[in-house]
Picture 1 (cartoon, rainbow, N blue to C red):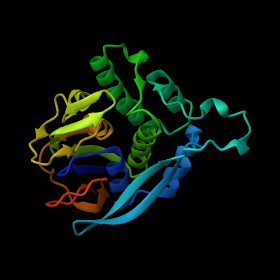
Picture 2 (picture 1 turned 90 degrees about the vertical axis):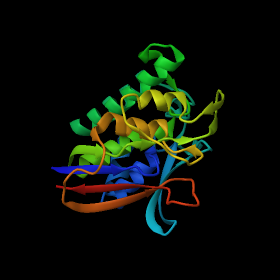
Picture 3 (picture 1 turned 30 degrees about the vertical axis):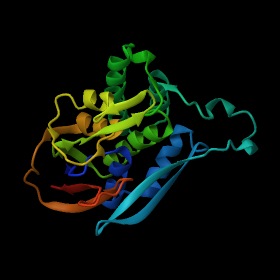
Picture 4 (picture 1 turned 180 degrees about the vertical axis):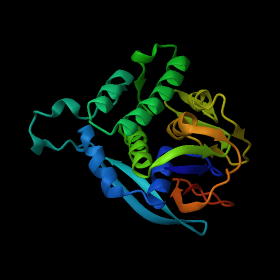
Length: 252
């Protein structure tokens, strides 16, 4: 069993986590195959590309959402097409009935619960009534379940993380213009050390924050370990002065 360190010098998002884990030796074919157990593959496609971010070669992971319904499947599976809003309860059912390994299921459910509790608190609704829109939909299900699948496949037992820079400035979300970090992200990171950052923009997304807040047992400098695998996961944005990547180190 191995240790993993998330070096979040440029923040963290769900797609950066998957990119970094694949870059460090996670198996994309295994990931894709396991994700089919969710029975949602008519809603998305996965894409892995090598990109260079300020001089660092890294893996960019994208979930491409199918805009068009594919009608050739007939109408029998129409019920799981494109829910813009999936409830927390529904997501839990999808994950529990997929037949993942026990560890994958446990990780995914814990991370979703973290987000659900935070969203519920902000919108003042009980957990089982929380609906995901921004976070919700398909890409965060893929990001969170995907991260769980890869952590299981890579045999990760203990996770450590640096403090989390959240960025600064303002961002546009469904409900208007908000300060960074957005309320849900800040709630998720309650109790987690946040690092100061001059960068304008959102560095930590709710999904990325939830993965690390749920799973890391300690925050701070890298623990003593022999590094065996290293991965760089690229974010969407590019910054002038530093590479927008998440670095992950795996070792014993």
